[in-house]
Image (cartoon, rainbow, N blue to C red):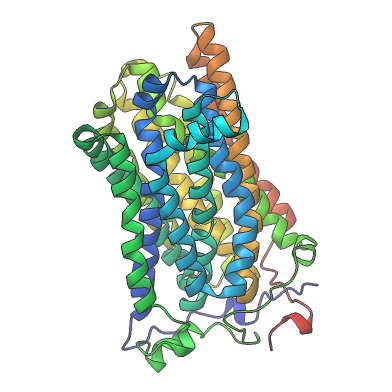
Length: 469
């Protein structure tokens, strides 16, 4: 059941910032570093893919299967991760998630041993290296699935609606920092100590983050470092909302899936997450295939591209606040921002036609498209806290994450098949052109469907017995 809340607390002017106390930004910093570690661990394989493909004789389809295994398990795990976060609470669930994914990251170093053992045990015909990396990616995916549900819930707990997409943009930019740091560190570690050491050293960083999170994070109402004025500011736009518990049962999936608001978020994730996955997993191979670049040659182009995406993430997250100051509701403000953002990926259509001018042309154009994705992501993630009560935000993020993961699997698998098909004909650039066209148009299509499903601010009102009053 929903009621239109346009005109009540949802569209009230943002409260004045507290004179003292900015501890919420410490929490944002923790989320930023967790997301940085998340993407560092995720990115190691894509950077080493050209050399690992040569060492183990992987085809594009083999690599696509390894990447897709991560995406498929990540998608499935996201659905359950949201429920676990809402059940255990943000603090405990985040610790569990990062311990699991850091262990999975380190496990990549032992992929050959894992693959040989499973191949002998199960009599599989798949190459041992492919089996081992799929197992390690599966463990990584299960843990990493907890990052965004927990981070979005923490943002909903520690920030008023007027600041949430900006805070989300900041912590989401950790993905870009991770993507920048990875090409600066992974090739060096691999060159000096071998590819196994790269996975071990990068994976171990997450265990250090757990210590800081355990000490510095707590539910706002119990947070001793949070001033009363800052707590009141965080809760300033909660007028008319029932208080919610830090943990406990969220509404069931059936209840949430009957809501238009849930499907708007699902569409926004399903149609666009695959674009980011494509850039993340295939860009190094694209530069290698088209320009013959070695792994060491990729460092500067990837650093420039992901530096651009950091600007998009933070800038896109800040954009809706302009519309909120003009009196628009949070959801309406984000949709206005997302429409503007959706036009920028169209420049990716020029990456192939202008690619003959040099590799910097597609790098910059794809960088603009990837920046737009991060700006879009900062807003689409925050929509959940605009439309849903806090105690079910992580569950909704998990449902949308599943949809986004499935979209990512489809894009990765289709990309692998296209590249093998056209590559065998000596026309691999045609395969890339098809994928770039999808990446360019996905956002406008997604925005249109979301607008039809939820035309304007329409806050979900759940049955009273589910409201944790």
